[in-house]
Length: 448
Image 1: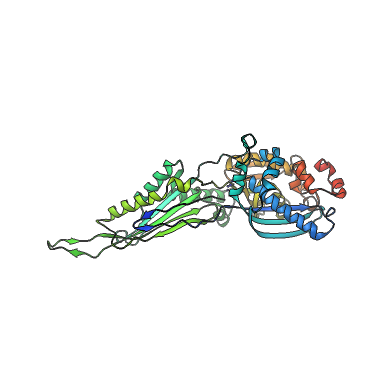
Image 2 (image 1 turned 90 degrees about the vertical axis):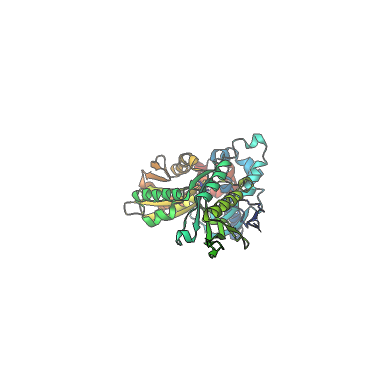
């Protein structure tokens, strides 16, 4: 975590005998946070373009790591303890970037800096562990408190009695829910999760978004969905000497799947096939037995290291950006904000509204502080006091008014100081601005 507007650590160390078979440890990918970042270098200092590019690329990677750290450290703390966190965490984070997904070489831009943009996967666990190595006094208030994750549970039965339809397995669902609640996790039914998702889609459509865009944006209210299917069949009827006919129930297979609703990644999936000869007197007996075994899988050890996705997705609508080309350039401005992990340009509407889907570092609770203290503070410093203000904030939908559209010009967007430096610490500014030329150009803006 939109919040999160949010990568997940889900470790299964499991070896349980189930219906005569052994469940192997699930093959899981280490949790990663996908981050888009902008790197800068001073081409006047690095006289060779290749050197300027290399430095800007290194800077982009550092910025990606810094943004990922922001998922676990509040913005205020990161600013106040920038040198400490940079020296102890960011500069020592070799191997934290899993891979760079995309590189855009922007070269020397009209603002005078060499720009490189990247999209990268950053391992979450090493950063979290590194923050834990700080002394107690150093890390007080640094590590954000993570709210308990929410699970939605939906297991179904398919049997001759259901006529081929899949019906909820109330016993199995109740067993899982009770286990998860026992360990302090929030649990809702899959049906409730779907209902809430549909309600949010309707709300966003009422705000002017199309159904297609709203459906792409809205995620389930649960962080993890646990789904499963139990397949039962009837044995052939056997006629006893007394004349009675007996028919038993056979469990043919059952499966479990856990899905990260933030990324749609399947983080756990197993199919279970019991050995031949496992029969039950009736369907109820089979369901009770499977329900108990399903519940046993969800033990405390499985979830003890689970981390709620530390990001949050928000729909930002800017009202008053003069034209579509300028609106698209605003995407780069947003990406320059430390708290912004990713930005998707969604729509430019006829009434002058520009719609972005923005992934912020941190939970929904921190969003208001991030919008006021980081995003609008940086924009208003660059474009003039009072140029941007929040008109409405409702759930994950925020409307920002451009009070002075004339301030949003191509020259301002492309030739003025990059937004990330407007909001940067003095230490960060000195890392980038090294030449006399850029120092003179931005002396007043950056307090050089």
